[in-house]
Length: 415
Ligand SMILES: Cc1cc2nc3c(=O)[nH]c(=O)nc-3n(C[C@H](O)[C@H](O)[C@H](O)COP(=O)(O)O)c2cc1C
Image (tube, rainbow, N blue to C red):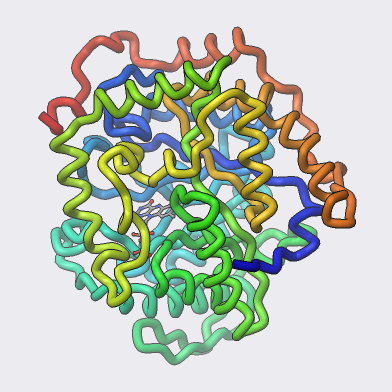
């Protein structure tokens, strides 16, 4: 397979993001100890640690109901605003479902969030997989590919309302009649409007993302699988002359030795909530598996893969910092512009990733750029103080619940 990766990918330093743990239970459905919490004090300290460690983005999750862990959830738009208020440079990407929100209401929210944060607000438009959230609210649950028809229209309306005076659109799901939102978003050099991310893996998702997204986000994937996604999105983008950028999820286990990292993965999986993971496997059949070609998110995921519910183990960011950095740069070579990461112990591991992994990535990126006949534009690498191991541990200690041994609601729910 030959993917034409644009030269700008090699010139531009990779961007790093982390998943905001705004739902309880951490990012793996397992009883293994996770020094991670879902409440605001922990998340504010984490966000500050992340921006001081070189992370440029944080991504919140939108979840309305308990499902296979995540017994408690904070709403994405409100939580994202709080994180923007707690930070100075971090861009916060809030997740939204078409079908739950109207694009005009979201555009208005986004413009206000952008002004409150001096141009740091972004959105991730997700088409949904948890049918019960829609049917439980009495909302229509569309067939898989139809959800992406709606999403494409939703993003067109959103972008039109963010950027145009007197925007009109005549759609199947959203019609807008000569509408003007005022003010417009903050004028940030190099950014035409707040960035619009898009999450999905299936053929329909790739098509819609190519047509309308600024950024395409995929679940965890191996190199070959990810290359297929890039091909699909680029082919669709070429139909309309767009050039989206690419993000990829990965669960990071960086340890002093590969053996230690792999043992941690084994322990996570050995301590998985089996009924919860199996229930999740049933529910996600509403995603790519329900389509004509059966391709898409979770369609080829094993039990082990689903313990990290966004397939983060598949990206194999598991080993020493050097091994992980090499793997990350291999993904950059096939088109990744942004790495979305998650961890067992977020605050400590985000700081360690910034200290131990990012500097090696930066060196390898220079070599990669030269290999492709260009130079890395190092002026775009965030200039940050870094966070020591002691400071990260202290930040986590100060914000974690005082009794970590108390049974969590996630364990009760999954039992
Ligand atoms: C990076 C990323 C973030 C996502 N965040 C959410 C979310 O917050 N809430 C949600 O319901 N679905 C989320 N999804 C899942 C999508 O809603 C959608 O169900 C999934 O991508 C379907 O994949 P498919 O195109 O293979 O059917 C996310 C997907 C990706 C890739």
